[in-house]
Length: 424
Image (cartoon, rainbow, N blue to C red; front, side, top):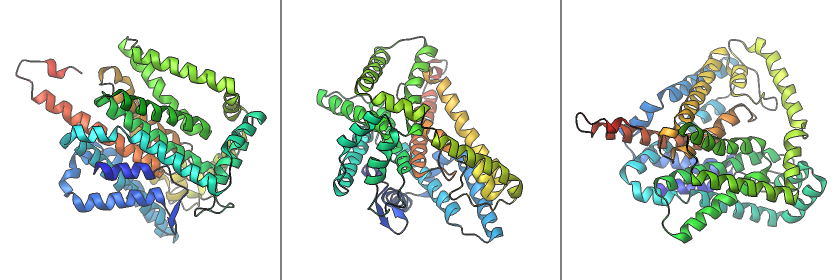
């Protein structure tokens, strides 16, 4: 199963390739993964994940059930709520495969999945290079014009929107904001890889160099993406590392080295002029801020007409808010279930962040995996949990189930009167 999961990771960033009809490559890979997991595993193997993730799973099932009922009441289709239930199944399947891999085949599973960052970054580089060649795009020229004009819109229009066209999306339909999920997949792959490296560090200098290259390439891709939501989610990782050091009252060589690398990277961005482009993107490129503000105002005005049963179409008029869009579509009770989903994830994130100094180092990137879904819940158009976030949540859940159950086993194995097993 580890190689099947690696195949899903390879397909995850290639989201502009349409396989058939509405099915894109990464969603097709997720569905095939779910089908193979269901036919090859007995129902009882999902119990550890379902018991740990019960509040999250139940809240999502309730949300989708109410949504289906609201759609039936308004005479609308069931595609979206059923799709979200399928993605919930992918979440459980992913978490189960990760948990079982870490438990039953730990060394080989970790050894393989350490390369998820390399798999995702190289998949994106190859796919994007192919698309740019087909569409006649010169990335060096586009980046040069972006820096010269200090205008991030040049990069979005001439690189991403142009590169993503022609593979199932025509130029009128394809949107530059597809890059949010494309480059979000890179962050997911990096965090999953770092967790496994934390469990079993590389011993070969060549392997360490290749891993470092893949992580550096991932950072570069995320920066170039100009996706504010992905950059913000990625920034949670070093901030969590700093918090862990402060809570543990320790300054490790790795943290110092990481700070130096960040400083050096910032200096390079400043020297090339790309830092100015990023600054403009966050502070002056406010057209999307204004558009989202208008959409949020419109959504709030519509809440009164959708109080109990929803029925408001959010396509093209999304508030970019998971709870509010759920309210508009399915009513207040579905919105309450959506709020439970958000509260569960925020509570888990804060709990993990506050206890990182008592956890093994590999729990840092696992905690960072939760940042992207949380950010996207308040920034993604459509007000849904996107496929990449479902994958990130599934991977995080698998790691967390493994950590919780292995810790319980360690405590049970301690002799009577020996309290060392209770230590973090």
